[in-house]
Length: 406
Picture 1 (cartoon, helix red, strand yellow):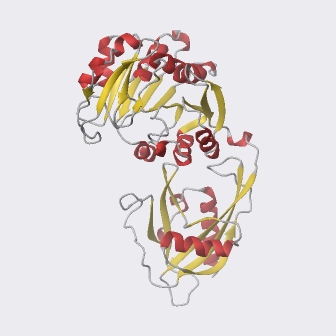
Picture 2 (cartoon, rainbow, N blue to C red; picture 1 turned 120 degrees about the horizontal axis):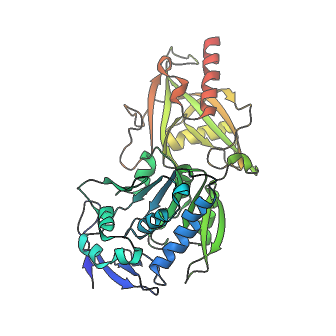
Picture 3 (cartoon, rainbow, N blue to C red; picture 1 turned 90 degrees about the vertical axis):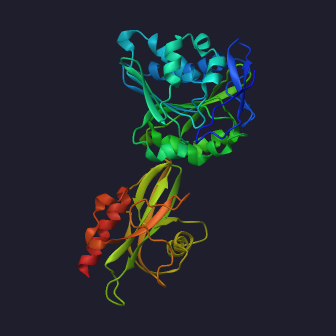
């Protein structure tokens, strides 16, 4: 029986969702929009149990010596089967070992009541009908909470992954990465998304997914995750489990040279220092950071060449480069890739012409679709605590010392 999902602001109309029986007798949905099934046709419940419960939920519990709060994030709430089975598994844990549980789910295309009624989720997940209904309940808001039982709750956020990653302040112990396959949603299986996942995981936290494609595994590894192949559920030879490692346990493999500049404005004509400096507000790996303009050194260029190139790429204008103010003197490990050692250079600079790029009036005042904005800040108003990275704060202290000496 084909059913039409109801229309919401984030859910285009006329999506046709067809319930289908899978090989273990449980139901899945086939999406016409993505030409994908929500669960494996070899067994919806079997896949959920194998990939997300055994390799994820129970794996995390086995690592606990005493009950610790467990915070789970699911990308792709769908029918809610993974959440329902997780709550059922949580209920079966002996009370002395039962962890406080919070389950956060993302789903930009929530299912309509007719579709849910056709899914028989209560039977498949062996959960009372009332609890299934409560999990899917909506009150016109993108976010709602379900108190499952004392010690367990579900928070649903019906929004896109990138918006959530940029706004979510907390971290997670376990991520169920259950988006549609890379062929249908390629934007969710790239290095940048896994960098965001890396930042949202606690040290030692894990991400589990049914997908075992080589380029997905390499994207995870490039994002700093330790990836292991595990036997897959029926119909799949392998699946992936990725862990955010303790950075100190990762062997260093390469250097990463970064070049930044203090772009001055104002002050006396011809003066080395101005009275304003340019800050860059950026979203990196889904989080908000305030830093100095600049970026990574490329092969075949020196640090000064890099600073000039970065200015043209980021600002669209050339700069007159001044003296080197600071270079990192202590060991610094990359915040994004724990196998990299970072070396940073910081120069004074001024624009060759009047600023022609957009100047924001407030922090993180982005244009639509952008992830970077620039703003002038009076030197006397800038505090090192305004800067997100320790290396930038050390450079600011060196800048202040140079300025005072002049």
